[in-house]
Image (cartoon, rainbow, N blue to C red; front, top):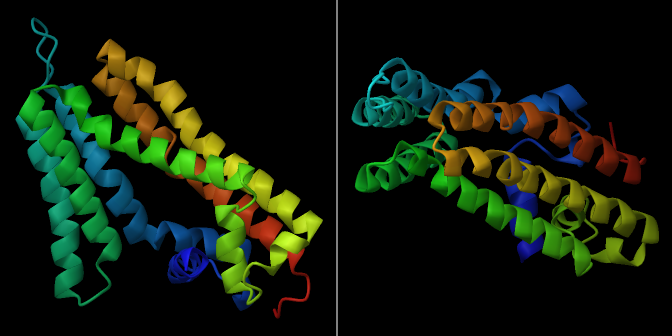
Length: 227
């Protein structure tokens, strides 16, 4: 069931090795194209810019409510635009929910740095899930790929596939762990601008190459996949 759920999610994201698409096409599809990139990046970017530009020299704080309002407003605008165009709204709604939850953390505490807490929690959960799945021999990458390639869990009997899926899961766990290791010190230091910038830099710029590596590795395991 887990493999089917992961495989279905990967297929919806355009990451089906059986379709024989180019690596560039798959990575771009996984990011959601230009609209997906904007929906992912723009709310956070606007938050950082609005907060940084309005920082008061005496207090050292920016206009938190303005930054939060603009960030959530942009996420809401993307969702409304998709609804009007009758397009899939999953990515936009996810972005809106994420922006809303993050804004709630910051608003209720009055601390701009708390806007990043949901992201820390998400990275910790994903990283743990990938790490545990690797060490118990049920790599999440393997489960998704096994469903997509129509072999279920048969890949576990192949040492080569198990080894590749193990290291792919470790790589993804490493990405989420790196985000926490690099960003948390700035959170505790209260540096909103640096924290927000690092979140953007360690977002899609690291996600895209790892998607490409994962795609190429999985395709190499199934050389007879139709092109």
